[in-house]
Structure formats: C-alpha cells, structure tokens
Length: 201
Image (cartoon, rainbow, N blue to C red; front, top):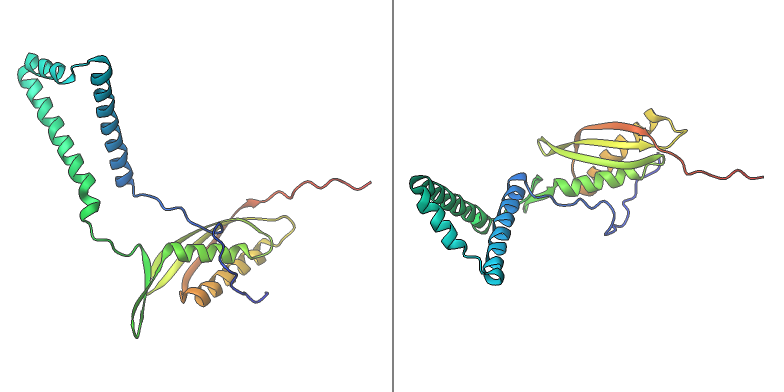
C-alpha cells in the first residue's frame, strides 16, 4: 500500500451540504405559506378593492360561536407560529455534532462533517474506487464509526479494495484529525462502467 500523503484541500472537493433539521424546514414552509397568503390578500385589497377584513367579519358574525372558535384557533396558531419563528434568535449557538478531544490547554472539537470529508477523501485516493459516499457517527470514547458506500472499477479485487479503503481511512483520520475508528463498514454498491473505448483498426 502506498504511503498516504494528505493532499491540499480544494474548495469543490468533499464539501458536505448543510441541511436544516426537519422541524425547522416545516416551520420555514408554514411561515412562508402564511406570509404569501397575507401578501396575496393585501395585493388583492390594493389592486381589486377586496375587502378581506369585512368578509371575515361578516362570515364570523353569521356563524357566531363557530366563527369565534375558528378566529380564536387561527389567532392562537399564528401566535405560536410567530413565537416558534423567533426561537432561533434566543437560542445560544453551540458546537455542531463533534468529537471532543481534551488537551492540556482545553478542548478540541472536530465536527463530524469535517471527519466525513476527510474519510471521503481518503477512500477516493484508493485506485479502483468510484463514487464514494461516507457517513460518520460518534462511537463513544472519542472514537467514530464510519460507513462507506462505493462503486468499484472492473477488474479489481473487491476484498483487497475494501481492505485498503479501511486502512486508508483509519490512517488518514488518525494522522489528520487525531480521531480513531472503532468500526469502518464498507458497502460495495456495484461495479462502475468504464468509458467506451473505440477499437483500433
């Protein structure tokens, strides 16, 4: 196995797109729909003379109790939505999910996203490996568990490729991030197609 030399980072290599949590995505979606509906109502009032408040007031007065219940429920829902939308402004920012190493001068936090990028880069350096996807999970004690899904090139020994992927990831993470792997699972998703080469006459 060739010695592993950390390569210089590239902006477009191994970047992991950030994802909002599901609850925040739902909150953004609902807030956007409410604001959009209010915008269309205001636009209609300005351009076409819609009297939305009068229509709502008339509907509520015609239905008395039902109208008041619906109005109260809508007001409560909007109040809760506004309070939820303000929540991020009052939440103290902290570290993202990370592995913590204690040193003589304090703590060092290495994010799981950074470890994932390093592991992907190490696996991609193995000759015969294609389309690398990596997931990293904390394993306790400062270690991580790594799951690697790859495509392999034809005419390569799959067991040897998997062994080299595991060895390179373990060595690379230890050298560059000071992180040990408790487990590295490799999933071979398939065999990649080689580009078609025209036959020589």
